[in-house]
Amino acid sequence: SQKELSNGICTQATLSKFENNGKIPSLKILIKLCNRLGLSLDSIIGVNDSSSKKVAKEMSKQNSI
View 1 (cartoon, rainbow, N blue to C red):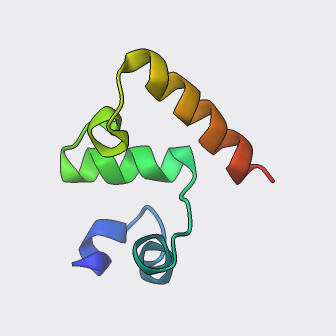
View 2: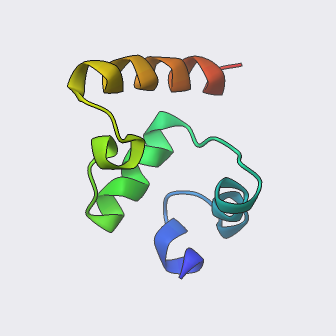
């Protein structure tokens, strides 16, 4: 459930926004959610190693605005 997944990482409402409103999670939150789900960040983003670094850098920029 959203409550179980978000517990200790973010609020359930925030997780819902990621799922339903296209809100982009911070890289820190995304990594924690991936770890909880047993997924690699690359599997979520769907890119190779060099591209994933670029995507992570862009996500960091977006979340610091």
